[in-house]
Length: 66
Image 1 (tube, rainbow, N blue to C red):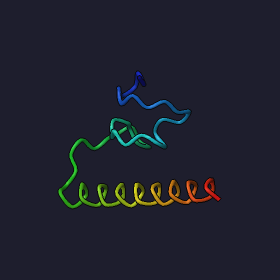
Image 2 (image 1 turned 90 degrees about the vertical axis):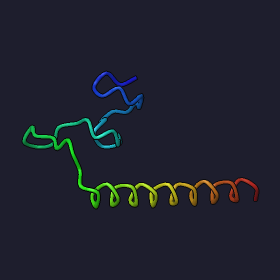
Image 3 (image 1 turned 180 degrees about the horizontal axis):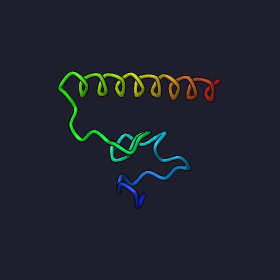
């Protein structure tokens, strides 16, 4: 588990990949609360990423079956 935020993700530059929102940004200030619109935008973006990942997995499966 990553010691910085406890999200359980392992990667070289944690802030680039983690979605736990526990990391400080640029000037050392980290917002703790998001508006409903900001939360929705983040969720929609995440959903799009998941859809793209699924497409890539399906393409890989088709490629391997050929």
